[in-house]
Image (cartoon, rainbow, N blue to C red):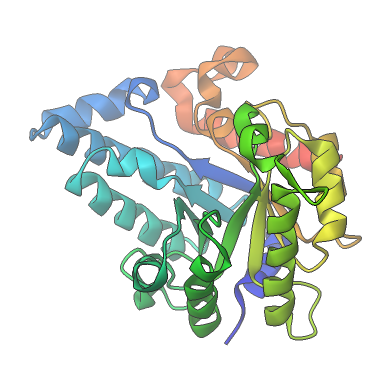
Length: 306
Protein backbone atom coordinates (compact mmCIF):
# COMPACT_ATOMS: atom_id res chain seq x y z
CA UNK A 1 0.00 0.00 0.00
CA UNK A 2 1.28 3.45 -0.92
CA UNK A 3 1.08 5.95 1.93
CA UNK A 4 -0.79 9.22 1.66
CA UNK A 5 2.32 11.35 1.98
CA UNK A 6 4.10 9.36 -0.73
CA UNK A 7 1.14 9.81 -3.09
CA UNK A 8 0.96 13.50 -2.24
CA UNK A 9 4.65 14.09 -2.83
CA UNK A 10 4.54 12.14 -6.07
CA UNK A 11 1.66 14.36 -7.22
CA UNK A 12 3.55 17.52 -6.19
CA UNK A 13 6.59 16.40 -8.14
CA UNK A 14 4.50 15.44 -11.18
CA UNK A 15 2.76 18.83 -11.29
CA UNK A 16 5.93 20.61 -10.14
CA UNK A 17 4.02 22.74 -7.62
CA UNK A 18 2.76 22.55 -4.02
CA UNK A 19 -0.29 24.67 -4.89
CA UNK A 20 -3.59 23.48 -3.41
CA UNK A 21 -6.93 24.82 -4.65
CA UNK A 22 -9.64 25.19 -2.01
CA UNK A 23 -13.20 24.54 -3.13
CA UNK A 24 -15.30 26.95 -1.04
CA UNK A 25 -18.43 27.70 -3.11
CA UNK A 26 -20.53 30.72 -2.15
CA UNK A 27 -23.86 31.36 -3.83
CA UNK A 28 -23.54 35.14 -4.09
CA UNK A 29 -20.21 34.88 -5.90
CA UNK A 30 -21.05 32.14 -8.38
CA UNK A 31 -21.25 32.96 -12.09
CA UNK A 32 -24.78 33.98 -13.05
CA UNK A 33 -24.95 31.31 -15.75
CA UNK A 34 -24.58 28.57 -13.13
CA UNK A 35 -27.13 30.11 -10.79
CA UNK A 36 -29.62 30.51 -13.63
CA UNK A 37 -29.19 26.93 -14.82
CA UNK A 38 -29.50 25.50 -11.31
CA UNK A 39 -32.57 27.62 -10.56
CA UNK A 40 -34.22 26.58 -13.82
CA UNK A 41 -34.16 22.94 -12.78
CA UNK A 42 -36.46 23.66 -9.84
CA UNK A 43 -36.55 22.28 -6.31
CA UNK A 44 -35.97 23.86 -2.93
CA UNK A 45 -33.47 26.67 -2.43
CA UNK A 46 -31.09 24.21 -0.77
CA UNK A 47 -31.31 21.85 -3.75
CA UNK A 48 -30.70 24.71 -6.18
CA UNK A 49 -27.65 25.91 -4.26
CA UNK A 50 -26.25 22.40 -3.95
CA UNK A 51 -26.73 21.78 -7.66
CA UNK A 52 -24.91 24.99 -8.52
CA UNK A 53 -22.07 24.24 -6.07
CA UNK A 54 -21.52 20.83 -7.61
CA UNK A 55 -21.50 22.24 -11.15
CA UNK A 56 -19.14 25.07 -10.17
CA UNK A 57 -16.67 22.82 -8.36
CA UNK A 58 -16.77 20.17 -11.07
CA UNK A 59 -15.84 22.74 -13.69
CA UNK A 60 -13.07 24.09 -11.46
CA UNK A 61 -11.72 20.55 -11.17
CA UNK A 62 -11.63 20.27 -14.96
CA UNK A 63 -9.64 23.52 -15.11
CA UNK A 64 -7.11 22.87 -12.35
CA UNK A 65 -6.56 19.11 -12.64
CA UNK A 66 -3.74 19.50 -15.19
CA UNK A 67 -2.08 22.19 -13.07
CA UNK A 68 -2.11 21.27 -9.36
CA UNK A 69 -1.69 18.11 -7.29
CA UNK A 70 -4.67 18.49 -4.98
CA UNK A 71 -7.94 20.20 -4.11
CA UNK A 72 -9.53 20.90 -0.73
CA UNK A 73 -13.34 20.95 -0.63
CA UNK A 74 -14.66 22.73 2.47
CA UNK A 75 -17.51 20.59 3.74
CA UNK A 76 -19.30 23.40 5.58
CA UNK A 77 -20.46 25.17 2.41
CA UNK A 78 -21.99 21.95 1.15
CA UNK A 79 -23.48 20.91 4.49
CA UNK A 80 -25.25 24.28 4.69
CA UNK A 81 -27.42 23.03 1.82
CA UNK A 82 -28.64 20.03 3.80
CA UNK A 83 -28.90 16.52 2.32
CA UNK A 84 -28.57 17.78 -1.24
CA UNK A 85 -25.37 19.57 -0.31
CA UNK A 86 -23.89 16.49 1.33
CA UNK A 87 -24.59 14.53 -1.84
CA UNK A 88 -22.96 17.31 -3.87
CA UNK A 89 -19.87 17.13 -1.66
CA UNK A 90 -19.64 13.40 -2.25
CA UNK A 91 -19.95 13.89 -5.99
CA UNK A 92 -17.32 16.65 -6.03
CA UNK A 93 -14.86 14.46 -4.15
CA UNK A 94 -15.49 11.62 -6.60
CA UNK A 95 -15.01 13.95 -9.57
CA UNK A 96 -11.70 15.15 -8.17
CA UNK A 97 -10.48 11.62 -7.51
CA UNK A 98 -11.52 10.59 -11.03
CA UNK A 99 -9.50 13.53 -12.37
CA UNK A 100 -6.40 12.18 -10.65
CA UNK A 101 -6.30 14.79 -7.89
CA UNK A 102 -5.46 14.25 -4.23
CA UNK A 103 -8.51 15.24 -2.17
CA UNK A 104 -8.14 16.82 1.27
CA UNK A 105 -11.60 17.15 2.81
CA UNK A 106 -11.66 20.15 5.12
CA UNK A 107 -14.19 19.12 7.75
CA UNK A 108 -12.16 19.61 10.98
CA UNK A 109 -13.69 16.58 12.65
CA UNK A 110 -12.75 15.42 16.13
CA UNK A 111 -14.47 13.44 18.88
CA UNK A 112 -13.97 10.61 21.32
CA UNK A 113 -13.82 6.85 20.84
CA UNK A 114 -16.35 5.26 18.55
CA UNK A 115 -17.56 8.64 17.29
CA UNK A 116 -14.09 9.46 15.98
CA UNK A 117 -13.94 6.00 14.41
CA UNK A 118 -17.19 6.73 12.61
CA UNK A 119 -15.93 10.07 11.29
CA UNK A 120 -12.74 8.40 10.10
CA UNK A 121 -14.66 5.62 8.35
CA UNK A 122 -16.95 8.15 6.70
CA UNK A 123 -14.26 10.38 5.21
CA UNK A 124 -10.98 8.49 4.93
CA UNK A 125 -10.85 6.32 1.84
CA UNK A 126 -7.13 6.68 1.32
CA UNK A 127 -5.70 4.83 -1.65
CA UNK A 128 -9.00 3.17 -2.67
CA UNK A 129 -11.76 5.67 -3.54
CA UNK A 130 -14.39 3.02 -2.80
CA UNK A 131 -13.24 2.53 0.79
CA UNK A 132 -15.34 5.33 2.32
CA UNK A 133 -18.59 7.14 1.47
CA UNK A 134 -16.86 10.50 0.99
CA UNK A 135 -13.73 9.00 -0.64
CA UNK A 136 -11.20 11.59 0.56
CA UNK A 137 -7.47 10.91 0.61
CA UNK A 138 -7.10 13.03 3.71
CA UNK A 139 -9.13 14.87 6.37
CA UNK A 140 -8.53 17.89 8.60
CA UNK A 141 -8.89 17.03 12.30
CA UNK A 142 -9.37 19.08 15.46
CA UNK A 143 -7.13 17.82 18.32
CA UNK A 144 -8.38 19.92 21.20
CA UNK A 145 -10.27 17.14 22.97
CA UNK A 146 -7.00 15.26 23.48
CA UNK A 147 -4.56 12.87 21.84
CA UNK A 148 -6.89 9.90 22.33
CA UNK A 149 -9.35 11.56 19.93
CA UNK A 150 -6.68 11.56 17.21
CA UNK A 151 -5.86 7.87 17.48
CA UNK A 152 -8.92 6.53 15.61
CA UNK A 153 -8.04 8.80 12.68
CA UNK A 154 -4.40 7.70 12.84
CA UNK A 155 -5.44 4.04 12.89
CA UNK A 156 -7.75 4.46 9.93
CA UNK A 157 -5.12 6.40 8.00
CA UNK A 158 -2.62 3.61 8.53
CA UNK A 159 -5.19 0.97 7.55
CA UNK A 160 -6.22 2.48 4.19
CA UNK A 161 -3.24 4.63 3.18
CA UNK A 162 -4.95 7.91 4.08
CA UNK A 163 -3.70 11.01 5.86
CA UNK A 164 -4.88 13.60 8.34
CA UNK A 165 -3.93 17.22 8.92
CA UNK A 166 -4.21 18.18 12.58
CA UNK A 167 -4.97 21.80 13.49
CA UNK A 168 -1.81 23.15 15.12
CA UNK A 169 -1.40 26.86 14.32
CA UNK A 170 -4.40 28.15 12.39
CA UNK A 171 -4.40 31.23 10.16
CA UNK A 172 -7.27 33.20 11.71
CA UNK A 173 -6.61 36.37 13.77
CA UNK A 174 -8.18 34.85 16.89
CA UNK A 175 -5.83 31.88 16.88
CA UNK A 176 -3.83 33.49 19.69
CA UNK A 177 -6.83 33.48 22.05
CA UNK A 178 -6.29 29.83 22.97
CA UNK A 179 -3.33 28.53 20.97
CA UNK A 180 -0.86 30.91 22.67
CA UNK A 181 -1.84 29.92 26.24
CA UNK A 182 1.23 28.76 28.13
CA UNK A 183 1.78 25.89 30.53
CA UNK A 184 5.29 25.33 31.92
CA UNK A 185 6.62 27.93 29.46
CA UNK A 186 5.24 26.00 26.48
CA UNK A 187 2.41 27.33 24.34
CA UNK A 188 -0.59 25.14 23.63
CA UNK A 189 0.07 24.98 19.89
CA UNK A 190 3.65 23.88 20.60
CA UNK A 191 2.37 21.05 22.79
CA UNK A 192 0.03 19.96 20.02
CA UNK A 193 2.90 20.17 17.52
CA UNK A 194 5.06 17.88 19.67
CA UNK A 195 2.32 15.25 19.83
CA UNK A 196 1.72 15.45 16.09
CA UNK A 197 5.45 14.97 15.45
CA UNK A 198 5.39 11.84 17.63
CA UNK A 199 2.40 10.41 15.76
CA UNK A 200 3.84 11.13 12.33
CA UNK A 201 7.28 9.79 13.24
CA UNK A 202 5.66 6.51 14.30
CA UNK A 203 4.10 6.18 10.84
CA UNK A 204 7.13 7.42 8.90
CA UNK A 205 8.80 3.98 9.07
CA UNK A 206 12.21 5.36 8.23
CA UNK A 207 10.94 7.84 5.63
CA UNK A 208 11.38 11.59 5.83
CA UNK A 209 7.68 12.15 6.53
CA UNK A 210 4.73 10.31 7.99
CA UNK A 211 1.12 10.75 6.89
CA UNK A 212 0.04 12.66 10.00
CA UNK A 213 0.23 16.29 8.99
CA UNK A 214 -0.33 19.67 10.60
CA UNK A 215 -2.26 22.78 9.64
CA UNK A 216 -0.02 25.81 10.13
CA UNK A 217 -1.07 29.21 8.81
CA UNK A 218 0.97 31.39 6.46
CA UNK A 219 -0.22 34.40 8.45
CA UNK A 220 2.22 33.49 11.25
CA UNK A 221 5.49 33.07 9.31
CA UNK A 222 7.75 33.13 12.37
CA UNK A 223 5.80 30.34 14.04
CA UNK A 224 5.64 28.48 10.72
CA UNK A 225 9.43 28.45 10.50
CA UNK A 226 9.79 27.36 14.12
CA UNK A 227 7.17 24.64 13.75
CA UNK A 228 8.87 23.28 10.65
CA UNK A 229 11.92 22.67 12.84
CA UNK A 230 9.82 21.33 15.68
CA UNK A 231 7.98 18.85 13.42
CA UNK A 232 10.60 17.58 10.95
CA UNK A 233 8.59 14.46 10.02
CA UNK A 234 5.24 16.22 9.60
CA UNK A 235 3.82 17.31 6.22
CA UNK A 236 2.28 20.77 6.50
CA UNK A 237 -0.97 22.16 5.12
CA UNK A 238 -0.63 25.93 4.92
CA UNK A 239 -3.76 28.09 4.71
CA UNK A 240 -3.70 31.88 4.77
CA UNK A 241 -1.87 32.43 1.49
CA UNK A 242 -3.33 35.02 -0.88
CA UNK A 243 -6.63 36.52 0.28
CA UNK A 244 -5.68 36.28 3.96
CA UNK A 245 -2.38 38.05 3.38
CA UNK A 246 0.20 35.24 3.39
CA UNK A 247 2.91 35.45 0.72
CA UNK A 248 5.26 33.03 -1.03
CA UNK A 249 8.11 34.38 1.12
CA UNK A 250 6.08 33.65 4.26
CA UNK A 251 5.77 29.94 3.39
CA UNK A 252 9.30 29.34 2.07
CA UNK A 253 10.59 27.92 5.35
CA UNK A 254 8.03 25.12 5.29
CA UNK A 255 9.76 23.22 2.46
CA UNK A 256 12.75 20.92 2.48
CA UNK A 257 15.64 21.05 0.01
CA UNK A 258 13.61 18.99 -2.48
CA UNK A 259 10.65 21.36 -2.38
CA UNK A 260 8.56 18.84 -0.43
CA UNK A 261 7.02 18.69 3.03
CA UNK A 262 4.22 21.21 2.54
CA UNK A 263 1.26 22.16 0.42
CA UNK A 264 -0.12 25.72 0.23
CA UNK A 265 -3.83 26.46 -0.03
CA UNK A 266 -5.63 29.27 -1.82
CA UNK A 267 -9.42 29.28 -2.04
CA UNK A 268 -11.09 32.62 -2.73
CA UNK A 269 -8.06 34.01 -4.56
CA UNK A 270 -8.33 31.20 -7.10
CA UNK A 271 -11.98 30.26 -7.47
CA UNK A 272 -13.26 33.84 -7.33
CA UNK A 273 -10.17 35.53 -8.72
CA UNK A 274 -12.09 36.47 -11.84
CA UNK A 275 -14.13 38.92 -9.74
CA UNK A 276 -11.38 41.32 -8.69
CA UNK A 277 -8.30 43.17 -9.84
CA UNK A 278 -6.60 42.59 -13.16
CA UNK A 279 -8.23 39.20 -13.61
CA UNK A 280 -11.65 40.82 -13.44
CA UNK A 281 -10.61 43.30 -16.10
CA UNK A 282 -9.18 40.64 -18.39
CA UNK A 283 -11.66 37.82 -17.84
CA UNK A 284 -14.58 38.76 -15.62
CA UNK A 285 -17.64 36.58 -15.29
CA UNK A 286 -17.96 36.04 -19.03
CA UNK A 287 -14.72 34.03 -19.02
CA UNK A 288 -14.66 32.85 -15.44
CA UNK A 289 -13.07 29.47 -16.14
CA UNK A 290 -10.18 31.14 -17.97
CA UNK A 291 -9.89 33.52 -15.01
CA UNK A 292 -9.58 30.60 -12.59
CA UNK A 293 -6.93 29.01 -14.80
CA UNK A 294 -5.01 32.29 -14.90
CA UNK A 295 -5.26 32.74 -11.10
CA UNK A 296 -3.99 29.20 -10.56
CA UNK A 297 -1.03 29.75 -12.87
CA UNK A 298 -0.18 33.00 -11.09
CA UNK A 299 -0.11 31.17 -7.76
CA UNK A 300 2.08 28.42 -9.21
CA UNK A 301 4.51 31.01 -10.57
CA UNK A 302 4.55 32.90 -7.30
CA UNK A 303 5.30 29.81 -5.23
CA UNK A 304 8.01 28.72 -7.67
CA UNK A 305 9.82 32.02 -7.06
CA UNK A 306 9.72 31.75 -3.23
